[in-house]
Image 1 (tube, helix red, strand yellow):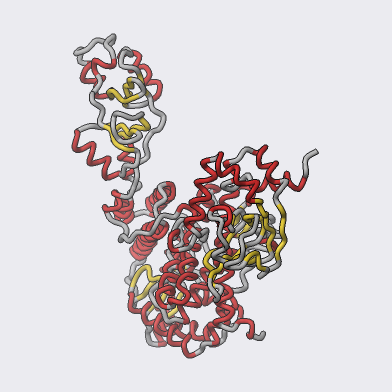
Image 2: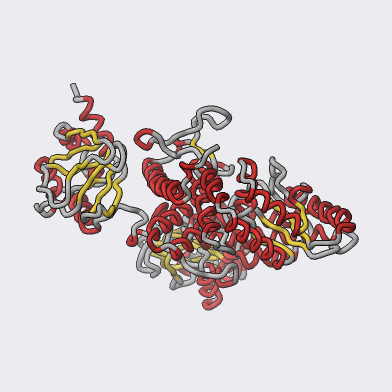
Length: 640
């Protein structure tokens, strides 16, 4: 009869490197020698310079902090599935860093003497251990690993969107190659091309591309009688085949076709005819991709005269988003491009609405995007949050002026609804008279929120204070921003209430950092990615930038990056927050596209172990940020 405990240990460790390189039968034998250790928070596992143990360790539940020096500087955090304490296994030396339980934890102690045999017999095991020992880190936010979470590439700086983005956009190509041998008859080739509905046939010799036959070849060489239908593929094929590597951008494909005067490109493993063919690109493929190019979409938006046209363009924007995510383009760039296109759609709706009103605006005004759109984080189709500011007018003109802008706002919000933005359930839209005010009225409204920070006022300000100028007069927005920053500095108690509100979001994890899911309602047993993970970061960034008098930066990740500049002592934490924000937003967007919803509520059963671990790693950063907010704004001392 199997040892139930050791069987469970083997079932757990088999999913993580280096144990995934070992046969299950061997793991089950090894697991019988593994000790299970329970540690309370802050319990020492081993100290720096301590004599080496006979074991190295794996985290089963909880987390372990690795620290160095007398100041207990944390150099890394080990999560579920991470191993640590490798020095006695690799170098036969005393420990150079200390380890203690960062929270209540269960550890597996793996005996070095029993494990060593696998380091000699399994190359994958030894390579992993050497890399782990050499890198000395598992923190996904450490300097050497920035941007790796959820395969996020290092960020690049580029201004969106221009024709230069053709150089970033990869073309989709057909991986289902239709091919024939050089001796195949033209009749067979034509029949197969008709059956498969393709415009080109690749001729392969020993699995390598030898030539290509296109519709043009059939017209020019067969239909004209130059060659009989009984001729062979090698007689009419174009050769040699022009080949390129699979990682080809839209611009490169266009240039290659123009340069060679051809309509099809063959893609091979290394880009030469000497390796196996992988795919084929046609001019038709290029034309389809051009339709989803941001520069082309921007022109189409600006030319649109009807809302139906803009709605169709927004579908193309979603296709572009899917393509960028599939290509793993950095989220910072994706957000900028999609935000620019969404803003252009909103501007076009406003222009169309203005044209439908007989009279021109009585005074200057500005349209504000609020919430996720204001933060340039609205990648999916969600509801609309917006507001309108208009220039101050004499008291006797206020009524008619406001009437005009409410009428305009109703047309705009209706138009936004028609192109895919749902109405805000709480009516936080410019069509609501409460969100369509003069500059002075907005100053008074925001001052009331700041000086009387009750629960409702904090909620309203948290939504409104992420506004971004979308259309109209920029100076009105700048005046309001200056007023808000000035007022918050005079009433610092507001930051305490704002920080308190930021800490009200439910924790993402519970005992042993298991995911906390919704206990009732329509989304029972689902994980609320927005409230439990994203919002603590969003709201933490907001209160910190306001308290630091930072203006004109609304994006959460960019706010944290600016905070890292302002506060070098907290640089590591703020950069971790920035990367966690981008990782979570990217994850939510992918989930939303996959399930055709907002991506907010996640069924944990649909996630892989790797995805769950990566999500949990962001929870550490959230917890550290919340601790900073509590200390800095003395939230624990807030009464009532």
